[in-house]
Length: 392
Image 1 (cartoon, rainbow, N blue to C red):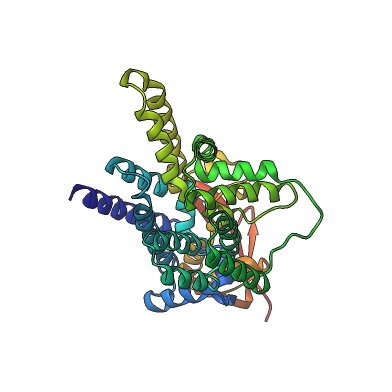
Image 2 (cartoon, rainbow, N blue to C red; image 1 turned 90 degrees about the vertical axis):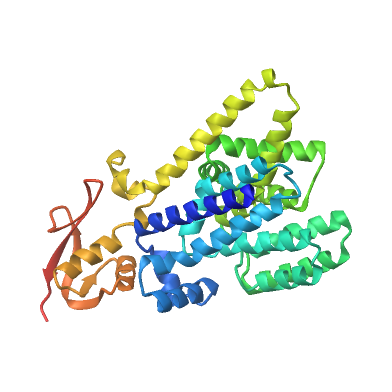
């Protein structure tokens, strides 16, 4: 009974932290565009949520927090055949929810959360050998996110290796259908983004954990034990690295297949740790402590994002800047009895529209250095705006 209770406790605490984090963010332009102009699954999901719970930040982000919670449970279930000890499985869950990439995915209103959930559901159904449900899940996933094209591509090579004719044919057909429906951009002038890709992966995992992720994939490649989870994680990593030599890639789509590899990371580390006598485990303990400390620090930075502007000379360089300003600005406008403004920045105008600030021809809102409306975080003034009456 202890393990289910601890898992439940971890999930509840994480859910609460994510709810708190959602209250510190504004809607971004891409989320506002998905809300007002989208036609995909994410659009209908956030539309439904806002109709049920009101047009606010909680309604915008709660669906993805719930999806992330379901993914956490599925990851735990997928890890059970790989990790035989309670401490290992719970460690996997803790690492997964503490990954900066996981936190961002759970808070951002986009298709990446659906991509992770669908992939884990597929892995769990295959683990249960529910083949009909598994095939249905693959077909359904085609309409959830274009990122599943990567899954079909990787599954094809896995099926070829395992001589699974059904999966081979289905994945090839779905890959062709996905390419027809969504396409896959490989055009443009070749440019190298290799270092950019690695730096972003380092931020998604935290640097030391990312290095150990690579080591874990390599060790399994050499020593054996190549599960479907390994094929997906390894394939996504190699494909993203190769493509990054030529073009900028949608890293969040490839990373979705990599951050679910936490059971492989924990398994590799614990196997190496336990084969050694206690007196020879000091280096492993030090490394584990260092990795976890850095992971917790990186995650804490995300939750405390509003208080970090003091470290930026240019506020627009803040990693969460595009998720700030709009909500606080709408509150300040409403305090002045203003529900309509003209904004030259069309992206900001669309974001303000989500909070009930419509377009106007009589009052113009301008970003200035000395405006009467000040937007501050942690005592640091980030932006100033001025209201200008326009002639009718």
